[in-house]
Length: 74
Image 1 (cartoon, rainbow, N blue to C red):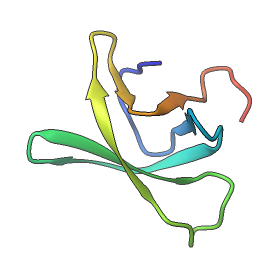
Image 2 (cartoon, rainbow, N blue to C red):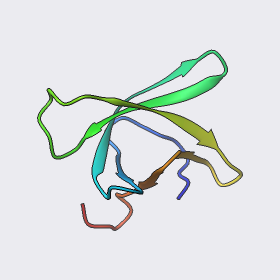
Image 3 (spheres, one colour):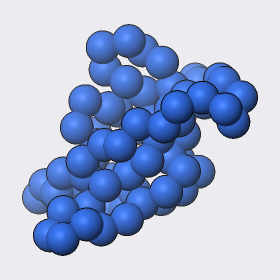
Image 4 (cartoon, rainbow, N blue to C red):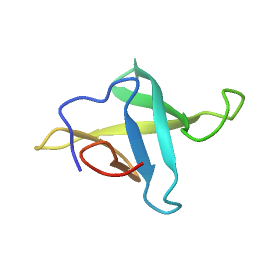
């Protein structure tokens, strides 16, 4: 699912594992945009994951993740 913008504090669900991840940072590197994610159910000591932000005609999305806040349980 595409959204208008990826922002810190959003929850995204990993498509394969079903685990929820929290967006902690969004940044640009050269010509690409990335989001840093950490597991939403873990302490702050867990490792972060860097995910490429894909732009589509509907908005932006994270490769391999689904937006999990739009009326869904998490």
